[in-house]
Image 1 (cartoon, rainbow, N blue to C red):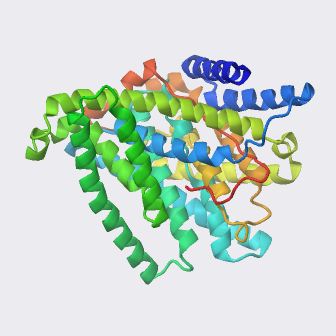
Image 2 (image 1 turned 30 degrees about the horizontal axis):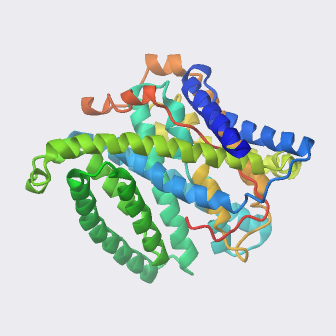
Image 3 (image 1 turned 120 degrees about the vertical axis):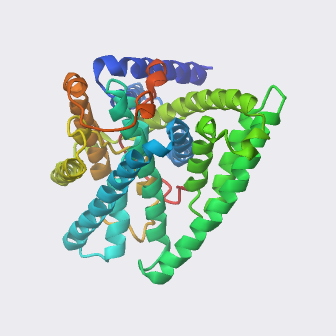
Length: 426
């Protein structure tokens, strides 16, 4: 009973952190990490021991990843007029991640004298923007900038995981590897098409009072099976979310008319709301647990703080260049590139024989904290953001995220677990 009370109180704290983030400008992830860390210190002070919770972190992270990508894709609106805007988001999600990954890999290789593949594998987690932190932390920004962050961070999550798994499974980035990857993508696209139609049909036809839980379980099941066969499973989740989230724009197709579109749209809205609620709970538990597992000496490790500052500076500088080149709003977007849940998951998934000493718990924790604090600084420019915004997007995107003000999400941040299972399914 004590455990139930403790978890309930902690999640209520997470909710308070979430709804107050737009006013305090403090990302809820920072408060969640501090809460988890403070809980650990309190338990140690009173000599209260808990079972080893380290193995739970990858599980929560994987489920959280699925729900975060699903939630993000449900928020994305695709229309013909929005395609140029989506294209810019695509480039800013993929370009900086690719450049930063290779730059950090060369740095790690020269520093540690390891193979470039090992260096690249260790660098990728630091190059991925966390939508779990970015999206809920931008509720005070203009709808235009919130829409951009939603697209960019969601795509960054997907590209990061796919790129990481591609490098992990292939000895070289060459023609045969790219050809095999293309075949895998085509297979996933085919599976996604049929499964999306099937799940949408179930969504409109199930009359039982329990209908959304089975659909979410099927999505998780498909993701897990696809991962067993090394397929880019996140593409399926992205496409399913885009389909459900854009039924209004797809209603002209005959196949949608056969699914009772009016009923389907109502059920899709309920499904979206449930996904947001569950995603909030999983994210909150993940970052509370992560904060609990943080080792104070690793967080304050002076041997890695210089590297963490260099990586954070490189992230902001590279982001500035891309924003200027594409004529996008520099402030506050330049500061909003936090690392978080995906970084932790990918870091835990690095095989022991590929891990390098410099890429340790301390460095990952410090980069996550520094990028999150940098984002917090960026959100302080809210007033300037409302006065000048050079981001040109169609009118049909301006309302994106308006409803999110009433139900903001919780953020994340930090890493440092001892003895974590590096075979976590990402």
